[in-house]
Each structure stands twice: as structure tokens, then as C-alpha cells.
Image 1 (cartoon, one colour):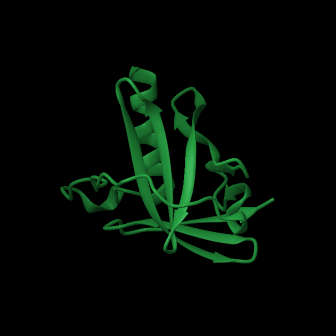
Image 2 (tube, helix red, strand yellow):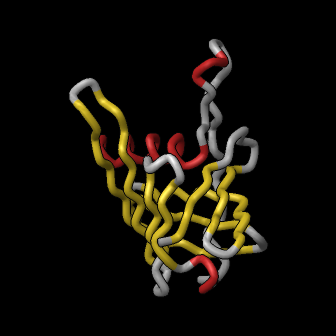
Length: 134
């Protein structure tokens, strides 16, 4: 469970750049909870890699989701993986993951899609993450 929680926190930060390292005392962004509703939208289906190479989103036709994130550590990089589900709703992507017995997490991202380029930004977050399909 600790590994899943750590991965969730890393993913929330990696996907949207939740905290500005230069801000000093500025608090980290805390994501809101959202209802997981919408539909699979074929325009988003595919494997998306962030332009900085840190994260990969695999959005499958069946609504399954796989997120991989590389996190720098003193001894190299650490790879984290989370599986879940995804849906699209009103120009947003919703990612659901976790343990149904212990609680599910739903993150909502504003999604800007242009051909094979995708930008994701959480409501209230400052930065967005750019992805390329392929």
C-alpha cells in the first residue's frame, strides 16, 4: 500500500508539475476529488510519452489505463507503474486508480488535443504536461 500511495503522489506531481521547486514556502497543489464518469473517446487512445521522457500514459480502447513514471533517485532512476481506468468528459480526461476496498483516486485533467500532441493540466495546477503519441 505504501508503494501505491508513493506512486500516486509521484504521478500526481509528474503528470502536472504540482509544485514549483523555486517557490520556497509555496504549498504543494492538492488535487480535488472527482466523480469518475464520461466515456472512452477514441481520439485519445494510444501510448503517450511526455516530451521530457518522464512519464508514459497508455490509454487503451477498453478504457484501461497504465501510467509509468521515472523518478530520479540518488542511485539512478526509479520506475513506478499504476494501472487503472480512464474516461473523457467535456474536454477533460479522468484517471481512476487505486484499490476498491481501500479507496479509489480520480484525477481530472483539462485535455488539449491536437493531432498527436496532448497537453494535460489539473484544475488549479500551474503547469501542464505535454505528451506526444507514438
